[in-house]
Length: 241
Image (cartoon, rainbow, N blue to C red):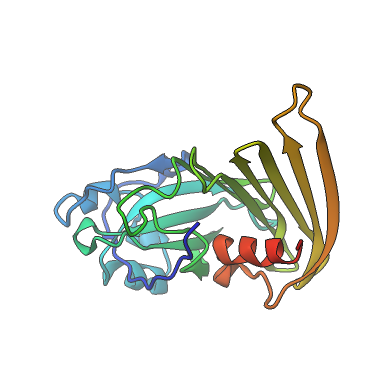
């Protein structure tokens, strides 16, 4: 798994279509140029978003790739997650994640992260993950990334608690020659937690497994804005040795 280092700029354009279509999560092709971007960004109606968001989206070279809607904070207004990807012209396909909280006035920018969603392609122009998904359910944002290759199946969720997004659980499942390994991390607070490592022996017919538990102390808090799954996974695995 390669470490993810990237910087990002953002682009989307305004239009006058309604927000009714935002009730379903959607994926759009990465092959979008500046002429087709207004059609793909139809959910971003200027008069429903705060001025800081529209300015943030209009001035840069980004398009919407994924979108999810649901109830995140404890009110009656639906909230939104937007995954924006650099326009194809940049060739790096770096991404940024925006969290928008709904209100009577529309959507307000709550959080943004330049690291929580890894680039879609690696340096060799291969996809890091075959399947990507982001959802909002029960006051949680769930990221689910799956690959047939060595990147495995990564899943992590952040819960809205105390007016903040806090890591609730992280899991990683990897298939290797002769064994499969699963990691499940559950935090106690921002910097400490418990890691369970389960190794499944696939060389035997009944595939026996062994599970070990470790106390984990993170070097830095696993906050939403700076969360990087690759760095996080490497750090917790190192503490199992």
